[in-house]
Length: 71
Image (cartoon, rainbow, N blue to C red; front, top):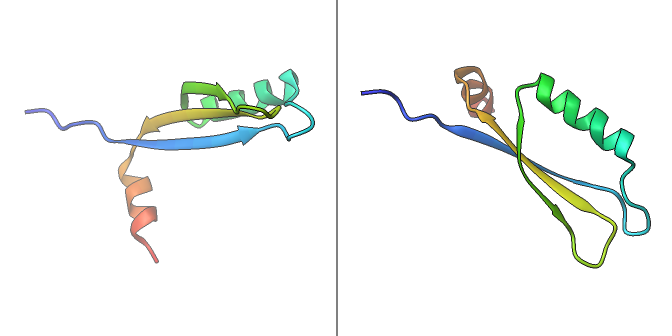
């Protein structure tokens, strides 16, 4: 039987209350995430602000599990 894939998630808000995020800045951040193995799974505008939130996931590796278990 194959092992079930476990995921780690990342959530980050972009922009400020008064100014939204610039397209170039968001694109650069998402390209960096892609190089790190993250896949965007969700995006939402935060109501009544100029902020947006991005949700991403990637497979949880043994190395990451080990790092999280260290004090």
